[in-house]
Image 1 (cartoon, helix red, strand yellow):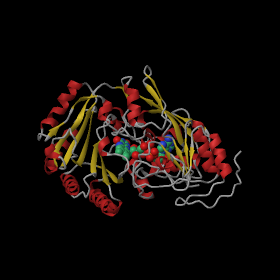
Image 2 (cartoon, rainbow, N blue to C red):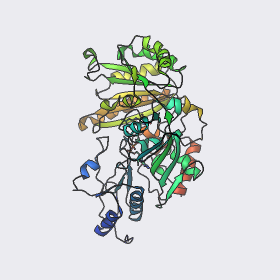
Image 3 (cartoon, rainbow, N blue to C red):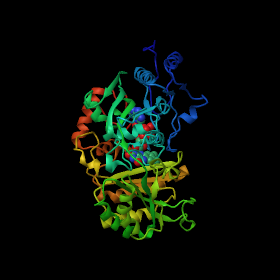
Image 4 (cartoon, rainbow, N blue to C red):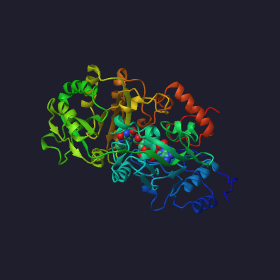
Amino acid sequence: MLNHNTALAPLSLDRPAPIAPAAVRDLQQRLRGRLLRPGDDEYDDARKIWNGMIDRHPALIARCAAPEDVVAAVNFARDYELPLAVRGGGHNVAGLAVCDGGLVADLSGMKGIQVDPAGQTGRAEPGLVWGEFDRATQTWGLALPGGIQSTTGIAGFTLGGGFGYLSRQHGLSSDNLLSARVVTADGRQVTASPIENPDLFWGLRGGGGNFGVVTSFEFRLHPLGPVLGGMLLYPLARAPEILRYYRDFVAQIPDELFTILNFMTAPAAPHLPERIHGAAMLAILVCWSGPLDAGEHVLRPLRDFGPPEVDLVGPRPYTVIQTMLDAANPPGKQNYWKAAYLSGLSDTAIETMVDHVARKPSALSKVLVSYLRGAISRLPSGESAYIHRQSPFLLNINAMWLDPKDTDEQIGWARDFWSAMQPFSTGGVYVNFLSNEGEDRVRAAYDADTYDRLVALKNKYDPANLFRLNQNIKPSV
Ligand SMILES: Cc1cc2nc3c(=O)[nH]c(=O)nc-3n(C[C@H](O)[C@H](O)[C@H](O)COP(=O)(O)OP(=O)(O)OC[C@H]3O[C@@H](n4cnc5c(N)ncnc54)[C@H](O)[C@@H]3O)c2cc1C
C-alpha cells in the first residue's frame, strides 16, 4: 500500500522533489511499464520532446503500458502532491508534456489501434502519432482528419480541436470523436460520450488535457482513396499578387480542397530545382480529397495562375501527403510559436505578412496560414469547447533556430510579427498553437461563455487542479 503519510519536501516545478524510496518501489510494482528515474539508461531520451528548447528533469517518468498504469500514475501524483505532466506525442510547442521535479505519465508507448471497417470507426490509444494512425486506417481505405505532420501525437492534438487536410470535408478530429475513456483526477476510469458524461465529452473536444487522461479515443472514420496533393511554389517577391488571387480562389472552393500557405526558405532538397535552394518562397500546400478528375478541374485555375515557379501537385496516397512537412519540422530544434485567427486577407494584411516574412532571421522559420471553414464552420457553436468555427484563416508564426544564444532575436521576430498582425486578427487563438503565454491568452482560446463552462467542468472533475500542466483552466472552487 502507498504510505499516504510519507513526508515530502515542498514541491516546486523547478526543483526535483525527494520521494520516499518505498513509495517509488510501490509505484513500480503497480506499473506494467517501466518507471524511470534520473540516471536510468532511458531517462534522458524519455524526457526529450519535439521542442528542443525544453530541457526539464522530471523526478519520475512512468512509461504507461495500459490504462491501469495511468490510474496508478494519477493516484501517485495526487497522493504525493507531485506536479503531473501527461505526455502523448510530445509535440506541444509549449513543452507541456514534461515537467521539472514531478511525475510524467508517458503514454507514448500506448499505440494500440483497432479499425472496424464495416462500422467505419476506429479505437486508438493515446501514444499513436498521426503517421501510425493513418497507416492503420488507410489499410482499410479509411481516414480521419489528422495533423499535417506525421509525427504529431493524436492525443493532445484531438483534445485541443485538431485540424488537417480533411477538415473542410469532415470537420476537426474532435468533431469525429464518438467516445473516450478517461482517467479522472480521483483515479476513476469513465467513458465520455454523447450519452455517458456528456459534459465531459463536450469539454474534451477543445478543452485540452484539463479534465483527465484519455486512455482511448473512438473515432468515426471516412472512406478515402488517393488524394491530389502537393505544393505550388512562388518566389516571395510575387507573394502579394499570388495571395490576392488566392484569397478570392479559396472563397469559392468545395469542401474537398484544403489549402495552407507556407512562407518558407526552400531547402536544398532533391525534389526542388537547385535554382531555388535557399530562396525565400511562398508555397501553397494543397490536398484534394474528392474524385481525382474533379480535383484536377478545381485546382486548374490556381495551378495556371502566375504560373508557379514549381508545381509539385499530383495524385498521391494520403499517408504521403501527411509527411510533406516532416523534414521541415524535425525534433530537437529551438522553437517558439505565435498564432492568431485572421478574419481575412486584406491587401494590408498581405503586405504586413510579406514584410515580416522577408525579415525572418532564421532560414528554418516558417509562417503558415491555413484556410479553414467548410465542415468545421457548419457545426453549431457550443457543439464542443472549440469555438473558432467561423474563423476563416489561422496564422501560425513558427520561429525555429539552432543556437540557443539567438533565442531573444528569434522570439522578438515572432512577437513583432504577431503584434503587427493584430489589426487583422479575430482576437482568438488556437489552444494547440499557444506557447507559454499566460492566462489571458488561454482565455483568448475560448469565448466568455465557453470559458465559464470549462471552469464549471474543471470544478466538477478536477477541483484541486491536478491536471494543470496544460493550457490551464483554473478551477474557481
Ligand atoms: C510540427 C507540428 C505540426 C503540427 N500540426 C498541426 C496540425 O496540422 N493541426 C493541428 O491542429 N495541430 C497541429 N500541431 C499542434 C498540435 O495539435 C499540438 O502540438 C498538440 O499538443 C500535439 O499533441 P501531442 O499529443 O503530440 O502533444 P503533447 O505535447 O504530448 O501534449 C500536449 C498537451 O496535451 C496533453 N495530453 C497529451 N495526451 C493526453 C491524454 N492522453 N490525455 C490528456 N491530456 C493529454 C498534455 O498534457 C499537454 O498538455 C502541430 C504541432 C507540431 C509541433
